[in-house]
Image (tube, rainbow, N blue to C red; front, top):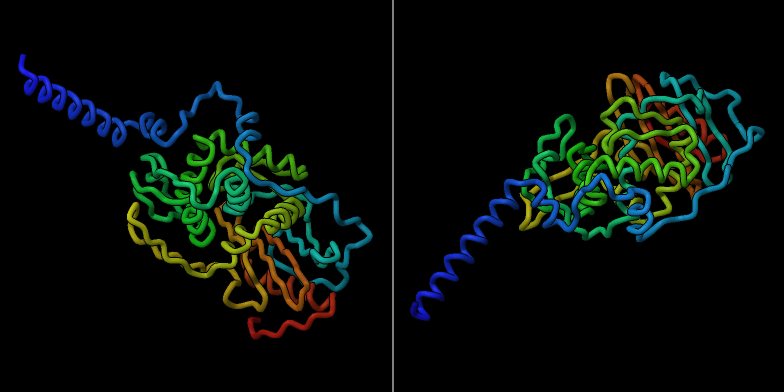
Length: 323
């Protein structure tokens, strides 16, 4: 056989191998997982992997409000079944209603999704959209199978658009699969002392997850230690442009970011069982406050009443015409 025929034969063989490889990558999710650098395997020790892949974390807060610091006299009536407002500067409770009762939390679970992701991956980490992720409905960032996003882009979709698809893309990209990522969410909850919290999926769509207003204030206070988290949750709108995915415009119009003075995030949530939920962080005259309202029929109105009462209690006059 001539040398030329050997070269042609090898070339055809290599093209065939490459064609098979491309087919596997585009059609077979296991191959996609391999190419992304991990193979989800139930035999892998999830807790060990959780510890080994951490790149960043913060010290959890101690128990930080004794009962004698409750400042709830003359507090307003809210429609929400549960609520809590805390002055982060002093740890004084400024409003309280059923704050230790376990409640459905809907998309407020995405706060923990963001925390876990930021502690295990860099913002520029590339994350592949699988067929499973692209098919997730309800609130959606509208990402498509085969696209590649950075963690930062997916976090904007998670917070601004409450994307359930972005939540699952983050889970797969950070932990290999969503089940393992949920384990990590619960590991983190235990680490930072969320005694009455349990997560069941990265998006919060599953109503079997629960938390309390108390735990959600603790979680939010912890999350706000991360400057990257702070920057994302205070964002009102964001354009995502890249060669690896289509153009996406995100706009956050579901909380008080553009209306109540000093608001700088954090997250809304809703399912039929959970009702309207809201976690809000504000900073007026250097006074930082976090509020939570759960199972409300008017989360914005409830939060405005709570914030007005709280800031009045600590001597800050917040001017607005919202009520």
